[in-house]
Length: 337
Image 1 (tube, one colour):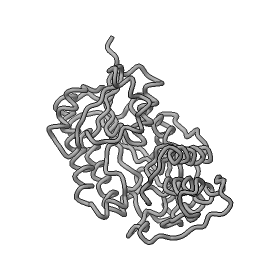
Image 2 (spheres, rainbow, N blue to C red):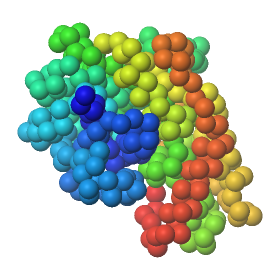
Image 3 (cartoon, rainbow, N blue to C red):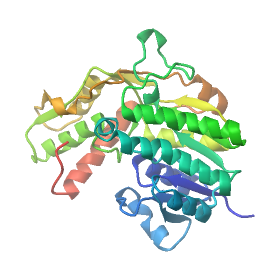
Image 4 (cartoon, rainbow, N blue to C red):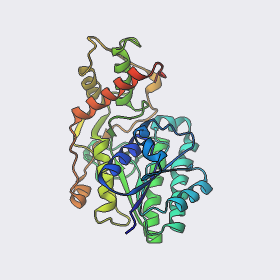
């Protein structure tokens, strides 16, 4: 019996690389990873020996903005399962590059699902939207369930509304097994330094190594976030496509620890070996508008799959800080952001 085949778009990102780790360990599937030719490979470097030997892991080069490359990637990989994670995923960047964000996230999802409709109609497909689609939610609507109205607060969030709706449209219009998720804040090792908690950890690691002054530069610290670990997130995604998948279903997924961004900064500083770290607001780190209350109701997904978060918040933050400590030890120069 032929082994199952999975296609992960954005395999070199934080989530994609952790999903690769999980699938290699927990399944016997053949994994096809979609990436751009210039994508850094550092997040999947431990898997490069398998990739070089063409054992289980295969890379296909494509860009969500290029229809021909997407068609070719789908035809080459012939996936039974698809995890569509690739995106322009930085909300703040989307204010500067809204058209690129829309093309990559909205039209890119259309291109991918269109190719799957033509060549792999029976694939089980996960389309990753975002909790950012809910945007500015009134406090009385917390925790946020799946039927909460969309009020996106950035071009990125608007693009993810499109991603979410396109996924559901393909399920309904073309009888495809497509499911969408709105994963709330998730982090851990390999998190990009454009995200708040990761830039905090990076700056603290640089301070500890005396590579910068003992000041952490921050944006808005008052937003409320519910934290999940990326390793719990990818386990949820696996269950999504393997546990009685429901065509057209959409789920909120997230952690179970809620605090302000300020409290997360305090947690990371409390883990530091440096005796005195100051905090300074950097106006360039502030968004024009912010999704400030991100607290999920995950009852629907938990009831369907039995999933629940397992990794404690403090372990997630400790592992994130240790990841940046290792990076700072290995590398000499970092962009200030």
